Length: 432
Ligand code: SF4
Image (tube, rainbow, N blue to C red):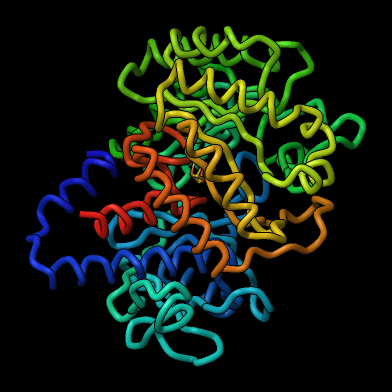
């Protein structure tokens, strides 16, 4: 059963009695706020805690260092199934407000707030009693967080002798993700986005340059052999290719083969606007379910600085492509990554975001994350700004009749990097 169905069931099951709803809202708020905290500031862990965890036979490492989406994270799961792709820092570190002090044998994570030294299992709040706009306060006393274990198939190799983890990775516990071609034309000539670690994974020998459909099919089969609940949906990404189609031909061929083999696994692809919008229909026809056309940064001046190559595509072109993609794939199935932490004027940011939502595009709102090896200067997303933006986007989804829970594949559905669904569940419950 998908996350969307589960959450709908849950809402349906709730007795419309006020105290049940208040309790459920408090839990959802706690999860949203803690997830925002973990995404923006990460979690800290000491060498001695890692050893203590490993002695229990729990495999614990710092996760991947590059590739699709924000990197260097480890996946954790809340009690309602919501996942968080969380950056980890070795103690002592200035960033995180929470430290992992233990992981129990059932993989429950015990955290303590660094300043107060209080355990989340017996004390309160990630941030403050009331959020700025007076919404429900969080209560961490019943918040359950679990480590998602490293899949076992990562230690196996395919028939060519390539480790499966170099072909595709589990993002959380239901999404398999891969970069089908790990090169991007902007890396030639120093035009790459400053936050991107795409080719670093190749330099670190963590992946292979090209992934074929056959290799991905083998990896899906192996992942599902380990756990039939793995790979409910697929996320495919690609570096921008030098040809005019910008890699769409590669996607066309791979998606067609994957869809033929696994017609019930929805496939998400991520692109930048290519030259000819006819590709949207072609990609849909071969089996693509959802598409991400990634702007990355809303403010044009910051975008030019952060994405020297990609920002040559104007926002007008993005709008033209988003609209065409929404026409072909329908609302809720088109998304765009929007990185926060660069915005100087949050009201202007919200206005821009509003325009994107208005045309039916869902934003994957993420905190900026610095990948070691990139030349991005220190930036940090303020967790309260992040929450304000998410709550705003969730309310706008309702206003424009969008529902991120209906997204069938990719980053919106996964939610590991962006809690839009978590925020939406709160707002929709308030509405009803
Ligand atoms: S949202 Fe999920 S699928 Fe997308 S990059 Fe993050 S962890 Fe991966």
